Length: 221
Image (cartoon, rainbow, N blue to C red):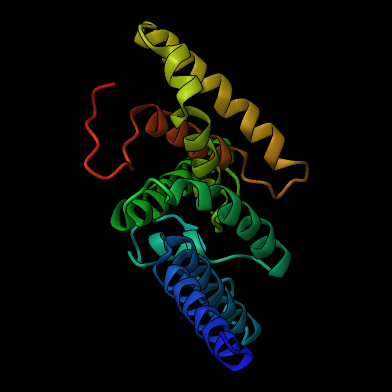
């Protein structure tokens, strides 16, 4: 084979590899999620700069307007908040997406995020009842920790250990894992949504135990 032929073949292979990588990224639910997080966050920051207040933040009444509930999962307070959650989504979401169908991944992400956000607002309002404090929450932290929790309980090791274990023990273990995950990833600070983190991690652990994201998966395990 001549140098010219070798060069043409190598260039063709590189082009094919590049196209394959581009196609994989375009079809990845993680890429979709990161784009959604970035776009919604940037729009929110722009609205806030105009003096209209925090856009897409979830607060009472929860469903007024209804679209703030799903958008609050993708919106973030500032670039550092977005970056921190994006790193977890890339690492944990990348692993989960290997065995998750596209629709189930997105439904799990936004569903766990909304549930975590609602729980955070409900608990915060209950604790601040009788005061003038207005509680709100935004960000993908709950959904991101749901991905982490899913990984923790959907692997073969956890399946082997928990096989035949009574359901109440599984629930106690799930609570413990969710608590540890919450403490590890939450750090400190008064603005951290500990309830959202815990609920997200708990949802992930329970969902991972049932392998609900696996295409064609059965719920029995």
